[in-house]
Image 1: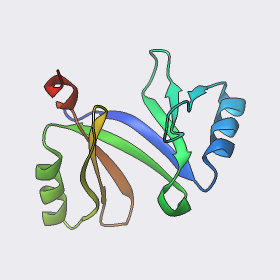
Image 2: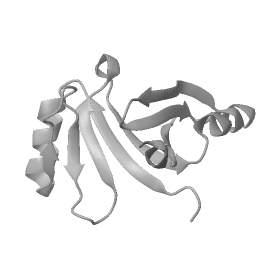
Image 3: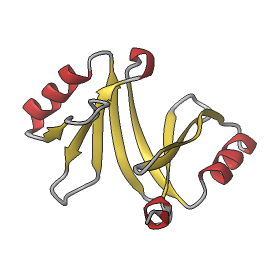
Image 4: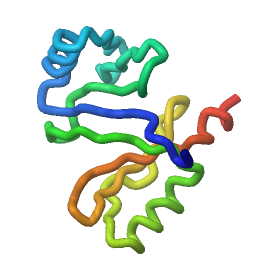
Length: 121
């Protein structure tokens, strides 16, 4: 499948509470030992990986991320098809290049630069 879903994210007002909830309900191993307290879900090689954290401005949201080769080109296509850019192409150095858009019904979807890791040396 071209452009597969590669990551999910659950955000809310209290990231730690959400991390504990999903860990307790599903037995997920969540590691938030990083400066952003972003809870990385260890998928143990099954399904897709994800993250659980406090969202920007405390918004509650579930987002999935699609791997693409050029996030800006996809944002341009989204805009031409009636969607809106929610987060412009943003780089977290050494980790990821991502963007987000809202579809015509307002659902927020993420894009991840699939080639980013191969560009790092």
